[in-house]
Amino acid sequence: MACKLMKFGKTKDIGFGSLSFALCLIGILFTFQFGDKPCFGDNILNTIGLSFLSNGDSGIHYTMFYSAIFFIPSFIIGHIHPNDRGAMAGKIISGFLSILIVTVLLMIIIDFL
Image (tube, rainbow, N blue to C red; front, side, top):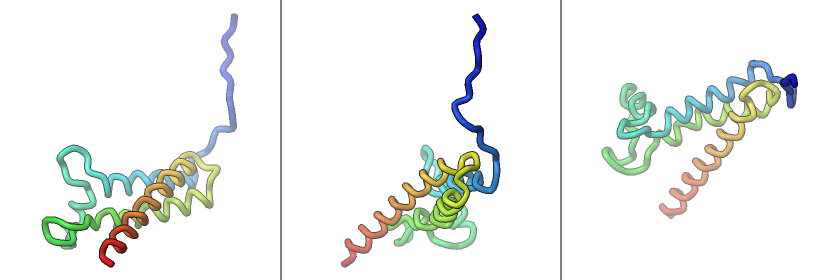
């Protein structure tokens, strides 16, 4: 009996929309801490002379808000070019993380009122 490979849909090409997934991954690397090492965003902000915490060694972690530089364009590119490989994944992940960041920002603002 011969085994046939079946395709369940059209394969997607790498295109401009694939940049959505790449930007999303950069935003994740910029924001999230893996293990006991600081996130890449903290190192980058320290290198250019910006503080990544609001009160010196503690406080609000600004790196999370700087990651919007990656997540918002990722969402927009994924929305405009949904037929490229990785575009939908980048759009969904960056959209979710953007909503999460906005929610945290709103909670911080409400807490200060």
